[in-house]
Length: 213
Ligand SMILES: [Zn+2]
Image 1 (cartoon, protein in one colour):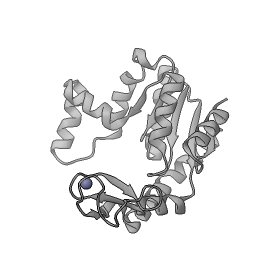
Image 2 (image 1 turned 30 degrees about the horizontal axis):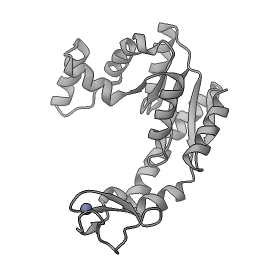
Image 3 (image 1 turned 90 degrees about the vertical axis):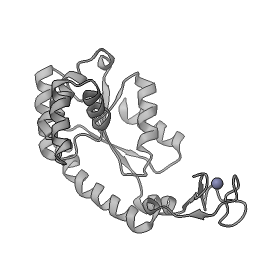
């Protein structure tokens, strides 16, 4: 099962990716992990990537695709893989297409997790974190016993910058702008599978399984 997983930030993508890893015995491949592994092992591409990063520049797509070339042909990819966070742009999607052609792989699906974005904003903006121990509460689903106080250490709760409504809305806007062209790209190849991801985790898993049959 060779998959691309697209879903909004805060939409449960990480949880569903873990489930797919387990269900299909496939690795989840994120560009961040792959980059770090190449830099750590000082591969030729890792050294090249490091040079770009040292100069404060983005690592070019060709370097990432080069790493992906060897990564996707490793033993643990024999049952397939989930690409997470790549591609993000059309040039990357086109580059990936060429690479997959070259190594004789074929994507099964680009899964699009559809989540009501208003629900993401409501859920994430209800989070409060403890200044002392970092414990995270949710005013709706998991409220503290004493208002604005941590039940573990009695320190004060606050709203992290990442959990503020404006920050969340901004991240969702960026996601929508980045993802819309990719959805079109994979729709044109009949690879998109939209999965309703607004229910609870078990319901979403069931929806995923149905979509992947
Ligand atoms: Zn605390």
